[in-house]
Image 1 (cartoon, one colour):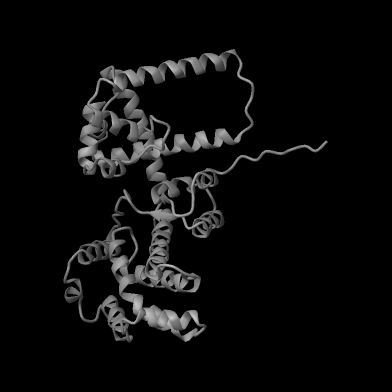
Image 2 (image 1 turned 180 degrees about the horizontal axis):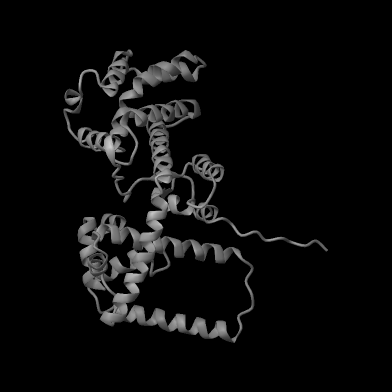
Length: 337
C-alpha cells in the first residue's frame, strides 16, 4: 500500500494554477505574494510567468517617490516622458540623450517583414536588423513605465533585452504583438525587482492591515458596512488606494479558496452543516438585497465582489465592463452599498 503525501502550494503557485496562457496577474499581487520569499524563488516565479505567457500587469501600481537627487531625476524623467516633444527637452550631454542619439543612428528601413522572412529562413544576421527596426517600440513602452523607481535609460536597456528575447522565441503569428509582449514583460520585471527592493510589498501589507482595522472600526461605529470613501477619509488616503487594498484582499481570499479546493475533502460534520446553512441563508439575503437595487448597481456589486461565483474585479475592470470610469465605478459602488 503506497502512502500519498500532500504538499501545500505556495501562494504564488496557487495563483498560477488558476491562470491560463494569455492571462495576466497584477504586479501588486505578485509583490505581496513573493514578499517573504528568497530572491531565487522570486526569480523562479517570474520565470514561470514567462514560460506560461502570463503577463505582469502594472495597472493600479502606485508611483514610487524616491528622495534625494535620484528621486528628483526619477520625477523629472516621469514628467519628461509624458510630453509629446520630450526629446527636444533633453539636455544635450545627458546620458539618456546620448543613448537615444546612438539608437537613432542605427539604420532602420521599415522593412520588418523582409528581415523577418530572412530570419525565418535561417539568416541569423537578420535578427540584429530586426532589433534595430523595433527599437522605437522599446522606447515608447519604456516611457510608459517611468515613475516606478527605475531610470528611463535602464528601462530602455531592459526593454531591449525583452525585444531580443521576443525575436529569439518567435515561431509564427503576429511578430510585432509577440515582441511587444516580451518588451512589456521585461519592463514589468525590472519594475518588480525595484519595488521589491524598496519594500513596497511590506508597505502594501501594512496598508491592507490598516484597511481591515478601519473597516471593522467603522462597521462598529456606523452600524453598517462603510463605503470606500469613508474608509479613505478615515485612513487619510485616496479612494483609489482604498480600492487597491480592497482588491488585493479579495484576491487573497480567492487564492485561499483555490488552495482549499486542492485539499482532500472531509465528510461534513454537524458544525460544517451549520456553517453551510448559514452560508446559504447569507447568500439568500444578499440576493434579496441586490434585488432592491437598480440593475446596473446590482451588476456592479456582483462584479466587484464575485457574488455570482466569478473572480472579484477591480474598479477599473468593472468600469470597462459597464462603460464607466474607475472613479464613477467607485462612486456607484459606494451608493449601492
